[in-house]
Length: 255
Image 1: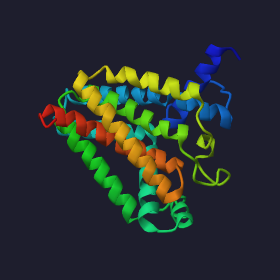
Image 2: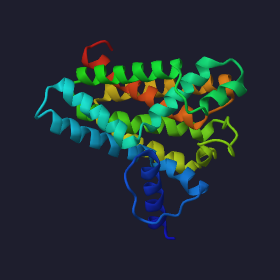
Image 3: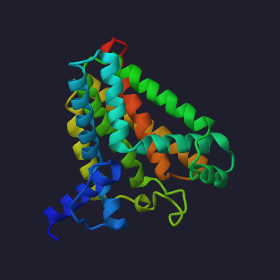
Image 4: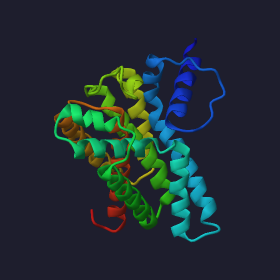
């Protein structure tokens, strides 16, 4: 397999892993290649954002902004299969429903939705809806937000221990540390989406994500000793929220 074919294989693995896009090509799939495909999570996030932007642009020609934003969010849920939302809910249930590490991990593997998880989902979806209603440059916000939030979430894999039992976890393929090449590609592509903003907004988003990553990593290590796949989903959802908040803060002149 030459380098170009290998990179295409990794990209398509990332696309198939994070979305419901049908992948018709026969791919070289194993735990090593899927783990390495995390280098393209930023790019896949941007594709998701572009699809959301297309739905919003089309819907806004027919409906008011309230409906267009709602349809855009629904499109995101359908396109990703609620992948990250599921992680957010599971993490909220686990961290909120127990004190012992083993019990937290046990709850996070439970498919049932609890009070903490449902509350986290409702709050996050409501935040995204309200923030995107208020943001002026919606297309820029969603494309950058989807791309950068997935970069932040994937970067946790690079230097954070894996907390769960890999043989029993649904995130087993992502339980291996990222290589230096993986993180370099991930961050390099993410830097391109910061160029969509004015300098002060870009720096604010970057600083907010770096601070959020530091605090999130510290929190999950204290709670369960590292990350799980659910933690990565939660990191994406929380990072997306932070990005929209920073954009809106600059828009209204709070920063």
